[in-house]
Length: 155
Length: 155
Length: 155
Image 1 (cartoon, rainbow over the protein chains, first blue to last red):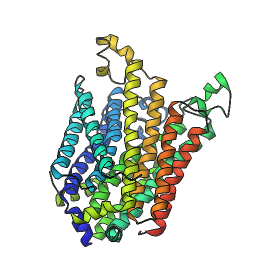
Image 2 (image 1 turned 135 degrees about the vertical axis):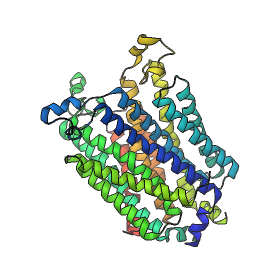
Image 3 (image 1 turned 90 degrees about the vertical axis):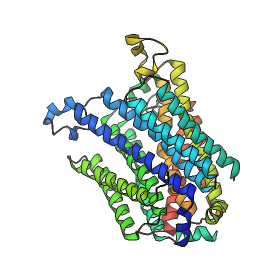
Image 4 (image 1 turned 135 degrees about the horizontal axis):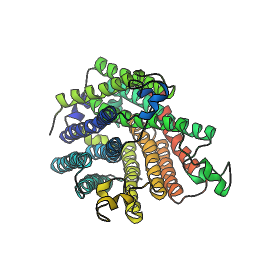
């Protein structure tokens, strides 16, 4: 128990824990936005989800692909493709004992870029707003991967 | 080495490890169910997968989108969207030294809700079976995120 | 701080860290391949991405589903479905104090199989190249899950 306490007293790990939790929670909220868009636009993927609106064969007209829903789903999938590598590489990077200020810069830049990415995707803002925020987040994760492999390579 | 041993002797981390492994393994089994459904219904996504059934142009008739396969894939994607934030937030929460009985309640509720969610999705059971199990799992992860940020905020 | 240093001095965790970072970085590169294929083939998912090629209504003809892009996206999704359970289960397995040579065999086999899987998917190579590499990676993760649950079950 003592060891575990000391582990989370490490400032880099505490900072990672805070930023990772914030951005994973934001990612989860995309499910909620998708559900809201489905209900508001009456567009569903499963027949059993439509029965509140119509019975039997009539319900099938609500089984559609709608661009307003698909946009949220693409934003969600892009989050999964980027936030999860950030989590995995970032956790291992945090455990490798990096400099606190360097680590904080990585975490803050990533979380800021991904929050802006969501706004740019859902509004939608004209390019290159979404593209630039995507590449900043991408670059931060690659930078942590590079630093980690440079300091702790074990093949 | 000694430190690592003590780390996994922590009861919360051992419990998280058990429940997370169970639910990640369940998530992986969805790939297997998808593969079975594709073979049983002869519905494939790639031309090279059809050659066991037909040669050349003839093989292309097996490249279809089939609702029985798509349902499993939607259930799998929903797992990814929910079980991965549970893993990330749950691991950090476990490291933050929570009360054992509170932590166990979170892990058990999540794993139970997601197992029921899979049954409700694949049967399919009428709503709100799937919806309720989704929201229980969602609420458990948000509760861990809230407790973690409350006890260990470092911005 | 001392504890954290000792944690990453553990050889199994250092090895996991190296192999996991390599394969997560490879997974991230799939986003880059998708973007390249979209630009080369002028096929986009969002109207705001087409404006470099055409204005107004004319831009909509670039909003298509293209098999060359979809193949990369399926490979990317398959990575997500398999590399993420490897990361989660592999991290917990590494913390449970396994034998170094056994752990290395698991990590090397998984990373090799998934690299081959990507080559087999994108070339594409005839089956069973992709199928076999998929099942090797799948089996490695299940083997780690089994060893972890056998040594550290806490329900």
